Length: 264
Image 1 (cartoon, rainbow, N blue to C red):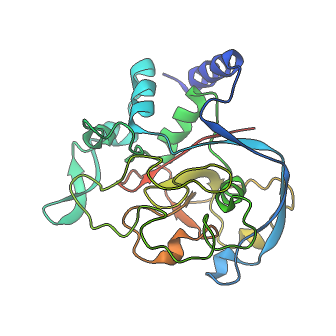
Image 2 (image 1 turned 90 degrees about the vertical axis):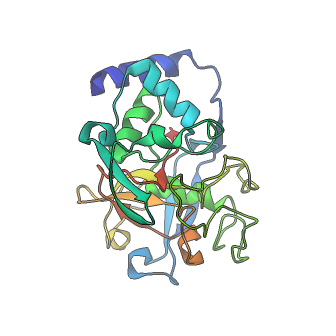
């Protein structure tokens, strides 16, 4: 199925919707983006104004992704290349025949889908009549009205009660079902921990130095796409901060990266 077809299908879905089902409204306004306490790529702290938007309440789940696959016949990049990066026999390596469905076994329907590339996430978003959030939208949503706080829940250090993190690697990633931890002040679940989340932006390490003050969309081009939020295997708590930034190649599919969608 072509990209155009996904766009057309998304437009049809959007026109039929009377509610933003499963999404949370994020009101327009300014917020302070970035941090002076992280790496240079988080600096400087700068004010950003965003128009209002909607954000998925949770990361996209295995069940939701399955519905996309069943309706469209889409093949993920891992399927097309014949395997993906995974944990086998006590180590990480490229595993032949590994793709998202290997982790979408019974009882994991409500776990975030992983082993999806940025391109896979983008295709799903188009099919759903949505899009991937910008990096700025993701950070504002993660902060959840708590201006200047380190984490979506405030300044308290992560201790295992706020999010899923610091888990050892297993053949089946130790993600948890969504909504197992408290939401932030916007009512969003799993903004940090559980699975990293793709954003729409190209990653620019020095982008904050010349980022536009209104609705920034990231670098114009690049080698990597932005990922945000940390994951189940994050050990360092600083990676769960709202301001923390990460990046990966768009074609990468790994056991700790998923996504959620947004809509203007």
